[in-house]
Amino acid sequence: MNGGFGAVMQHGYIVTNAAAAAVEWAQRVGAGPFYVIDRMPMDQYFYRGVRTELELRLAFGYWEGLQIELIEPLGSADSLYSRALRDAPGKLNHCATVVSDIDRLLAQHGLHDRVIQSGKMPSGLKFVYLDEYLPGGLHLELIEANEGMLAGFAGMQAVSRQWDGQDAVRPITRLQEDLAGLRQ
Image (cartoon, rainbow, N blue to C red; front, top):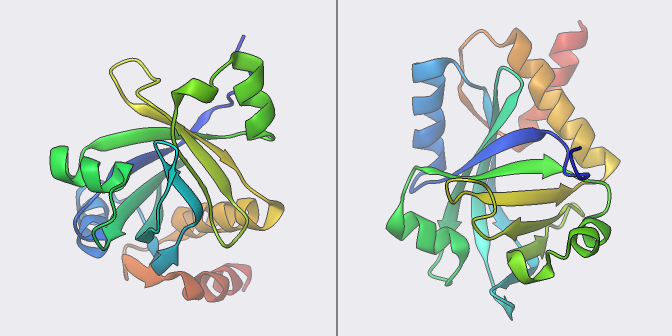
C-alpha cells in the first residue's frame, strides 16, 4: 500500500549558492549537468498560511535516476527556504514525489493541517510541503506537474545519462539544444 504518494523522485537541498553547490555535486558524485533557472518568482506562494513574495534560483540535475534540486532563496522573505538556509544550509531538506492531484491526496489522507508551504510556479507546476512528514524530520514535497514539466524532467534525465562531465552548470534555456544533440 503506497497511499497514492508515488515514488521519491527528488531530493531537495537549500543552499547559499546554487551554481557552486551544483559544481560540488558534479565533482563529488558525477551528478549533472545542472540546469539553472536564475530567477524564479513564485506565484501564489504561502508559508504557514501567509502569502509571501518569494523569488528563488533553482538548479536541477540528476544523479542516476534521482533528481537533485538545489534551491537558493533570493531576497530576505521569511520562508521555509530562508529558515532552512539559516538553520541547516546545504543539508537534505525534503524528498519529493509527483502526484496527479494534490488536493485530492491531501483530503484523502486528512493532511491539510500538515501543509507548511504551498505554491505555484509560472510553468503551472503546483506544490505543497508536508511539515516534517517523513521519518527523521524531513519534509515531503508533493508535486503536481503538467506534461511539459514532466517532459522537461525526462529530458534532463536523458541528457544526464549521456553527459561527459563537461559544463556542469548550464542555463535552463540550453536544455532544448542539449536534447537536440542527443538525437543526432
